[in-house]
Length: 460
Image 1 (tube, rainbow, N blue to C red):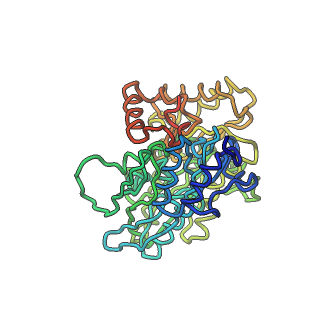
Image 2 (image 1 turned 180 degrees about the vertical axis):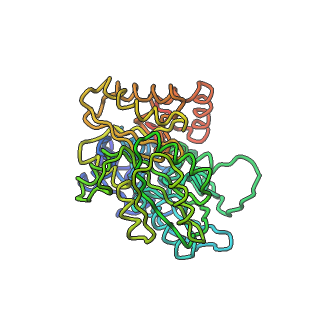
Image 3 (image 1 turned 90 degrees about the horizontal axis):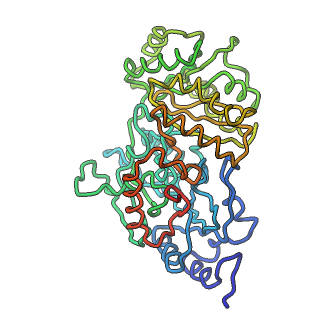
């Protein structure tokens, strides 16, 4: 009988050490503990080892060991996911990709950059900014979330209205598939019509097909002027109506984020901020525009033309804009001070968004009478983050009821966080039997041994 260390066969451990070196195979319980729980604290698992490869060759070597020994793997980046997709819930080996943090030189002529999967979104943003450009994907976890993780989940964020999500910025990938094959297409050709778009396939696959190790990303112009306004509305309906109009009238519109009074009050209370306006208002929209010439007058006219506006605060400089943005970006952290939330990252058609936001708290209370519902999100594209506190972490009846309502409204149960393990049971609500069969066939082809994040997406 062979020895084990922390539940892993000692022979397997020695093979992993041969690939990445002894300093990068972690088995100490205190060291691996942070890899066993997600950011929200809702999903907790255990792992026998965390392996930290340095490059694509080492990733391939680790996956070769795992494939030969039938050892399942969970790829992990910044561990900022919210649906349990990067947590070893069934004892899987954790593949920590943060050492793959190379940020290449900006190709100014092509407006592109090649980066490692472990580079943070913020690091890529800084590199782009230093070259006078911009990486358009942005969200609150930018300082921790990695490019590999954002590709795995096709992360959206606040600038989808103008630039699209991660998939729209992805011009090429390098990856190790579950078969052991290494694919690398990082030339950045905008027009390359030579078969299947493998980068697009891997984007949003949540680590179930392979491990992205590097990416070629599109950059966009950095505008000289950015203006942010926090606009208070008398109702959610008038706020949504205003944003719909701005999408048509403002071609400089970068972002439109909705927050409600109770959420703003919670943020202010949790972090000691003052309320943005003296008069409480049902809804606030954080709107941001940017252009090479000052867009203040364009934004002012758009706000003036909107119905139901109660008050507005405008900021031009970075410091003041950050003050306005905190009422939106601190929502997640503030809600976590109340309790471990159920997170419903959903999208519904714009035409039904106001009714959805008015009704979903009633849907929650029908299952969990004492629960509290918090709503905020990307109002311009119909993506609302519904957070529920005061319900048990395993309250599946709550999940099912909310998702059934979302689907009844013509929406999607996952807008930008992925399916993970949290939503795998409910995926058939949104995908037909034919679609699921196709996904499973792709999974079998690219991960024939079934070691790649086996508890995620198609697990049930």
